[in-house]
Image 1 (cartoon, one colour):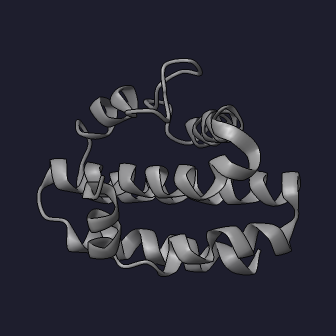
Image 2: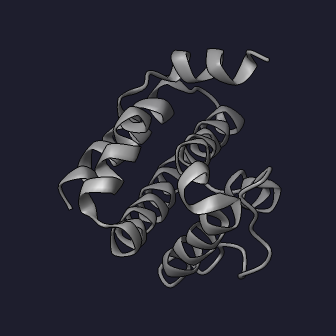
Length: 138
């Protein structure tokens, strides 16, 4: 998937802008929020939640400490947040990259590469400060 690298690179830019364990986890979860905002109008909140849960499940094959299916939630991500906060920064970044890679692959298999790329381009290219401003506006 050509787009996969751009999505992961944008994710690492968000993490790189964060300092401290909690800020890194928040940056990771902001990637999930951005994906949800971009995809919910097309596949619905439940569709995004299903892709997210499956992505975490796939990543869990390598990172056994990730939450079991049903424990992770797109909305709030509290279970995933509390799990990630306990691990070192490098491992957090690796897990997030694994989840995003799986998410992208699943999305492409669901709606195709062209539409996936079209929907997610603004997610990958948006600067973290832009996203923060968008989330804070009413």
